Image (cartoon, rainbow, N blue to C red; front, side, top):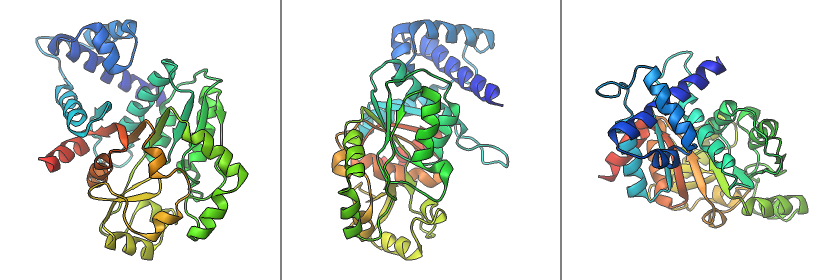
Length: 323
């Protein structure tokens, strides 16, 4: 199954490389920069597109529309990096995070291969978990991987600790733990926990992250979210968040439609890096699905992101909302 998934990702890259070369008029060096691969890899990808029979008078399955969405999002939202993947149909037995995970894994591997990431900060969520699933075995023993928020303790597969543990296995690097929950019971409890030496030492490493990869969450009007499913917030928390105008959750912090932190006590109980500290980070968010449209726009408007990996549904609707 993994070989098929890997092959699908390679074919998608081949189509992109072929379109950029034959239709976009890009040089191999420019294609290598855009796809974050070597020039030799570009040559092999274009050869693969030929072998697939995709290069004819036009390129079948052309990602032209996706590339245009990437360019428009980068320009309008001041992003340095944007990758838009085809949306996966919502069907039983189909992994809705497969394309996002593959694109995020490709991006992360390209950054590690470029050797410009010594400290990798990590959030939590399904897309990041899938990203780790899609990564190959690598050899980066000097890489440090650190969570930028407290643990989501009730569902291990989505836990930043689990993501880091599996990344340590994939890279041979060094992983760190932030031994606190995602939310403290009170603001005073948060203060006490954050002053612990073990917490302070890890936060100091997290602050220095060269790249921080995160998921983002919606705050649906029906009063249900992944955080509620995991037991991290309850119905009363949800009600208060909606009253405060919350549209998105980013690393346990809740934002309104303009991307501003909402005035709600739960934001004062979140354990991890503050939004002020995160503004200095190179943050790339991975999120997709129609339910994430407004949340994605909110986080984009916050100005916190340097990059976005999303699907065509979110990209098109976010741009439509900007018009």
